[in-house]
Image (tube, rainbow, N blue to C red; front, side):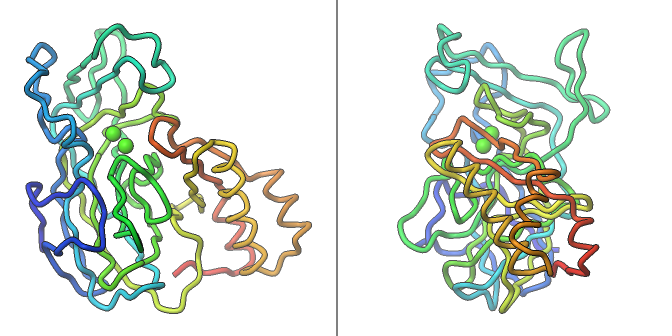
Length: 299
Ligand code: CA
Ligand code: CA
């Protein structure tokens, strides 16, 4: 299987980048990824003056996907995520939901043992590795990897784990896929600005879907289908993520608008991906079983 090494990385997604690797639709590839600090934080008591904070959220790539044209759906199946043996976290004044609680930058380096983060002598946390930044080149201006949007990017969706499928829309020829910002584990909201930030590797299978209509970005796993939306406010992101799921239901299964609205009100769950990036990200989750009942087959 092809592999892209972690020094081949970018800090923004852009149609102007030269691809570092190329694959055919349906092939698999490994992305070796740096943590969101570019592996610059090694220990808690190091001198942070030497850190280049602008080298933030590097994503490995971009990968050129043969046959992907503007408007095609790029299906990214997450086959595996392997993480290294330590996780890093930071909190800092002015950032996140706890922004006025800190006097200075706080850093934690958390060891991993037997697939658990050893948080302290009382608490250990099971790992559930996920990909924070994953996306394609945007149609127009470049978008920094700090920011989630219609192209994917820093969505910080804790459901993008091994076994999940992400649907993105190609805006440019070749799609230009990149990913990074792996979290060993993260709570919805990512409230104090970091997940358990880790170096690692991701295996994916990438398939181009022609003439397929599905909201993007969206995620499918064995239990749930999820529409994702990022906007300036949580309110707007919540409304758009909900409307995206509603439109998808009405357009693709034999259900009335009234039923679709009622259904989302009864068993659809709005969840916050993150509240700490330049745009806020929300997802609407609906059980995949609903689509099965109407014989809707996800490609
Ligand atoms: Ca992130
Ligand atoms: Ca992160």
